[in-house]
Image 1 (cartoon, each protein chain N blue to C red):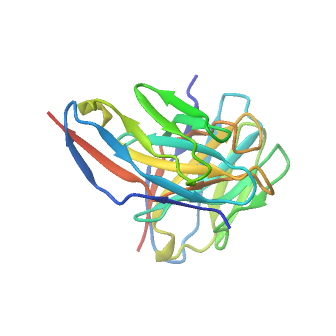
Image 2: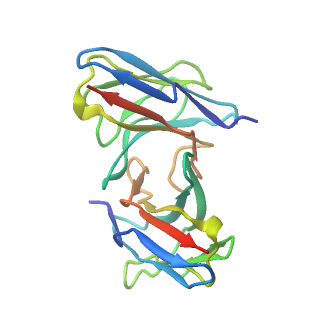
Length: 114
Length: 113
């Protein structure tokens, strides 16, 4: 089992460029999440998908879109990148919705927007 | 609202020293509480959890007790090792509404031989 995988590991964008961060899990989990991690801020939830076919906004959704492509895959898209989106992005999954379910995290994508 | 406050780091300890990382929370409802650990270059991993007041979570020698009266969930370990060097995150899930996780800012621990 690979667990949660993310691509790419590193990315540098110019302001205004677009890109999609990919995430996949092989644990047959129903729920998936996207977080960003900024210095001194901890992790903040961007979007989540409680189950296949559903997505909902988290704490900081502005500037992002998501797609739950199937049960395994959950992508995060930046349509027009801004320097404020420089961050480390983590994808996570859990068996079901609900914070008491352990979340499993991918290794992260470090994104720099110039 | 929901929030988690952790002690500021970084924390540097010698091997075999006693570790305490303080965590307090504010939440609606009756939250579940968690400690996650992030080793260098990796994603977060669940270290331990407690789902109701007075529960004690434990794993790998780490412990934390859910104290409702002081709204705290402090992480402790009696004797740290170099391999415990990592960033530790306290988190809560409030069990109401969206039921998502809210994280503290993280505390970086470095253990020196």
